Length: 289
Length: 298
Image: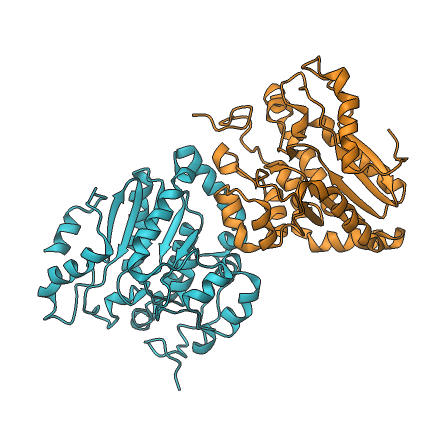
């Protein structure tokens, strides 16, 4: 699926996508495990990646619209980033649809493929590292819940906007599930949140809404849901000069590599077993009694 | 009589809740028979311990009087006795499976720093004492349960560092109590461990002022910087701290959660944990450019 020049897909048109995809899929509860999980477009030199939200679940039970991190999503995001880089995009925008931006690691997939647990965690961390040091400005439009590994992925971006809708929460619940964060994840979180938040986020699994994140400077703005995508596009467009040509993009990649040195050095390395094998969490991510 | 009771029941006991209103004055009346003496027994109990609703409550006691080396007990200064007793209290809390820790003091001081008069009288032990103090800070910093400090009074020097080791601090509003770390004024350079601890628990805009300039802060300033969670009225401090500790119990609810908490804190505070108690450089106690009461020599 190559990047194509298309007419700009505004947030109004996403409902068209749903209608297109929905009719044929609604009759089935399962989707093809190999389906496309995201769309890619180039809009005025901004690579726009959207997590798709069809109804239905993978064969292992995870609902697609949670945009959870599993081997499929990780691979497809990498492919999208490869294409963005090859096409000389000057900025990156990632947005979701529906209730979830990204609800974390795909725990049900991992439960069903336990021997892959370390490999999947490593791949997720490597994706975070790639986004963290990407040689172009990166913007995440947080349309909904941003949790656990999904929150870490969101933090890897330069900028976040989050919908002002009060139902959407940002939190990282490792403490509640018996999952201690790896060194790389810890460094990433410390690098992207102010110190005053560290203890609450990492040790207490505190839940945040967009207003509090704005106060702490973790999100740039909190527009209403209907304006989220356009605001994010506007921000990404305004930053294009920081990815304007190959030399600039190379510079940005290196600046980030130094700025986020500790996270970059540890994400994907020394990946310790987070406890998936001892599985004190249920596969849906709720603590076991 | 009160002191011997505490010593006999050395372990954690389920006690009726000692509120700050009734506890302090009762204790002082109990200890009234001590008023005639200026010295206390050097090995006396310096703290009380209770479990209240699965929260371990540790209080620094504040009898009148001073140790044989001159330090007033109610300053709650860090000396081998206090370090030992706090470690014992933490041992008992962990063994009892509590779900949160609350530490508070009484009177004008939360903790006024290292016991410099003790060190002056035992200079050969100064490195060892500093190591033990740092080890205690590291232990609290990475303790496998939520920790709350109800900062009832002055929190200075190593006492401020100790206070920073906790997850959460509450400090009363409109109080005269101060937070500051005056190493610069008394010729004491902070060890790498102390430095990493301070950097890990105060936001960047505070670093230069606190470490290099020994700036003094009141509770309102600390609230603004996010170093304290809240500034309740003085009479509400303990209850507010208990409420906070209870609200965090789910983050220490069972052994697995507590192990997870230790693991998370160990990574989150990796640099401080790696250096506290290790590579303890001589902070200059031996060269003693401070007076034993901690004031700079003229």
